Image (tube, rainbow, N blue to C red):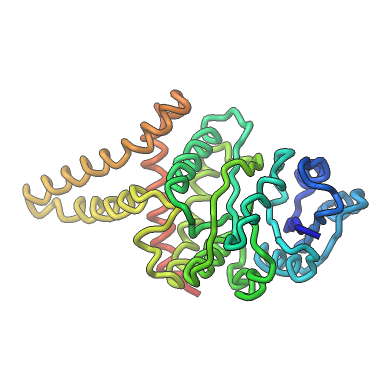
Length: 322
């Protein structure tokens, strides 16, 4: 068997059926060459009942321990040479699995990152898609990457097990996937990005939910970067201006505090604000080229995103290290 597709699921009754239907309809690979494994993470809704309706899907169960533990359980039971991961709210395109497996024809390749798109029409969701596409554009500049997200990610099983899979100390979907790819890349393993391996995903549609997601991602980045300090400066996924924005935000707050001490501090604060505004230009321009309306609101959302990230990092440094 070539591959095992593993899906962690927690209270996924609204989305899991569509995910499984899309996997059953995959083209370019014989059904006998891959298995589908759903790991129920202690759901309290009808997730298990829905999964059982799919006769060719293997169902595993665990107490609610989070997606990292669920994926490791699925990988341990997998029969495929390649373990492929997606999420219970993702809908793969018909050629997704074939595209995920294509790079593994190169024997040196041990990991593959796919991509996601969305069919949503709301402005916030469209901004979220423009945001991720900017990062994909960055990844295309690298022959090998160091970041694989599990919404569309795959590894050779033997290499996955050799590094003991995902770090189960991450309690939610919060950085356990880049942690794994960071660990592999540091060992010299070859990971690649295939933008043709597409799943459709639902982004947050309200500004509040979007900012809440950003806050908690930043909160858990503290744990991630405490394990991989060399990645604080750069990785193949994160746009450099994001980190510059966060630094400038902290300096601007300091500037407002010190501006009471005189005109020089007020000028310095004004210059910091100007620099911050300039950092908004690349992402805004990127969004304008893809979706003009989204580009118009991008500066506001980018500023709010920076605030959410900065507060999340601060909270993480205070409370999130353990």
